[in-house]
Structures are given as C-alpha cells and as structure tokens.
Amino acid sequence: MAKRDIIVIGASAGGVYALKELVMALPASFPASIFVVLHKSATEPSYLPQILSQAGQLPADHPEDGTSIQSGHIYIAPPDRHLLLEPGRVLVRKGPKENRFRPSIDALFRSAAYTYGPRVIGVVLTGMLDDGTSGMWSIKRLGGISIIQDPGEALYPSMPESVRQHVAVDHCVRLAQLPVLLAELVQESVEQGLTLSEGEVTRMATEMKIMEGDKSGEMDGMNVGELSSLTCPECHGTLARIEEGTLTRYRCHTGHGFSAKTLLSGIQESVEDSVWNAIRALEEAIMLLEQTAKGLERGSISLDDYQSQIDQAQAQLALLRPLVTGR
Image (cartoon, rainbow, N blue to C red; front, side):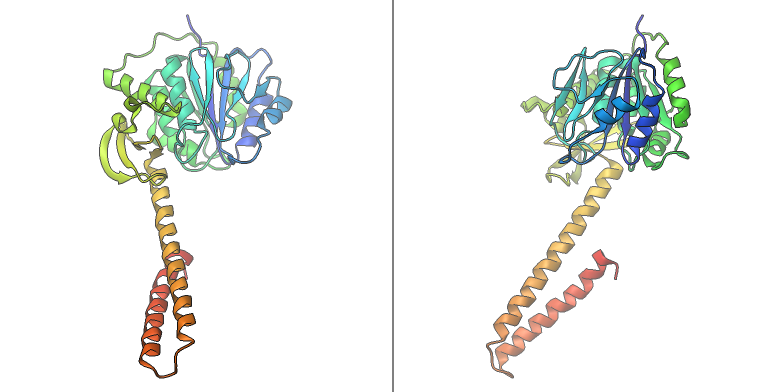
C-alpha cells in the first residue's frame, strides 16, 4: 500500500528562514520527496538549493525538465519556471503566470494532487496574498493532507491565513512542530484516491497542459470554467470563472490564472498605470502648448486660446494627481 511520500511546500516573504528551520530537523533517511516553490525575482539567481543543502542533511537542487523523482531529495523551482509533477518525474516549464507568479505555488500543488492524489502532503508557510490556497483545495479534494504554518507565528501570515479561511486544514502548527508532524505523516498508508466527475478530470487535465505550456487549441483556457465579463490584467483577454468550494478563481484564454484577491490587485495596478499615463499625457500637452505660445504676441487671440487650454490641462492634472499620490 502507498505511503504519503510527496510533500509540496509553498512560501513567499520570509520563506527562506522558514524553509531553513524545517530542513535542519529532517533526517538524511527521510522517506519522502520534497518539492518547493518560493516566490522570488525572475531575473536574479537563486541560492536556495545551496542554502537548504548546507542547513540540513537532504540534498537540494533546481531540477531540469524530466528529472526523475527520488526519495529523500528536495526539488526547488528555478527562477521564472513552474515546477510541476508527473508520474515519476518533474517538469520545469515556462507556462503562463498564475497569481502573477512564475513559479506558482498553486500550479505545483494542483499538479501534485492531480498526479499523486492522497499521497500528497501540502504545506503553506509564511507569505503575502493567497498563492497556494487554490492548490491546497485541490490537494484536499483528492484526498491529500493540508498543513499550514501557524499564522500567529508566520512573519507574513496572509498565505497560511487564506488557506485556513477556504480549506479544511488538517494541521496548523508552529515551525518547530512541523518536522515531527511530517515524520509521522510519511509513515501512514493511504487508500485509493477519490473518484472525480468527468468535468473535474477534464478541467484538471486541461489546466495541467496549460501550465506545461501546451499550445494546442483544445487547451484553451476558456474551457476550464464559466465565461465572465472580466478581462485579464496581464494580456487583456476574457477570463473564465472557476468555482472551488468557497473559492473563486479565474483563467484567461492564454492561460494566465488569478485568485479573486490577486485579480483585484492586478486591476488596481492597471487603474493606477492608466492614471499615470493620463498624467504624463497632460504634462506633455502643457509643455507643447507653452512652447508654442512663446512665439505669439501678448494679448493675441491665439495666445489667449493656448493659455485657456493650458489652464484646462492643469485643472485636470490637479484632479488626477491626488488619485495616485494621496495628496
């Protein structure tokens, strides 16, 4: 009978410290494979494999696409690449961003749940916003175990708190308790996973292909949910709405994925960008009007007209600036 031997971990702000504390206490004989997504810059090199290898007894690295899965090994998502699971191997792909991140915690969790079902243990550590919540919902839906770091201890409690609000969490623990808990859980045998509806199977398979970067027409992001009237802040495509328990998330035609909270954040950013663009355009118009007016005679009708346009643009600027500067 299978054991719970697939552990997926998501972290963001404050995550390096939390991950170090965890791996320090895991034995070299730990009988499971660990997969980690930590949010970080897409353009900066990652030293997390070296940090975790030195902190504990388990080897850690950035796997290559197609790397075979080994027990007692830590696989860390490389910068700007999704880490996904298939039977017996990992995929490292540059699929569409999810929750504006690549790598995405949700993408890793969802792929683990779809591939390994009840063998999966999901862990969400410190971090901001809510990446990991939808993926943890999939882990629970397919019979896996859900664990969060105690939000009261987390340096940034938003991610574990979001999971607690939307998912039936099995364990909420402090970091010091987590290694012992994992050591107990990986010894447990698991029954066969739950039977999903045909629609759920189709959606999960489609989303897996999307995150793998599959470009075939049948992998259209519109096929995974109900069409909405909202548009993607990344590419401006129409979004499909997906309901998961108390969660609502969205995916666009090209594959970008969002939780409701992250979508709102993206829309607010778009609004601010639009206001700044309007401010820039007004300032350029004022500069052009002032330069043109310099060559006109004082008191002329043309000069008065230019000055009227300048005054109007400055009045519009006075209305727009407080929207983005707060003053």
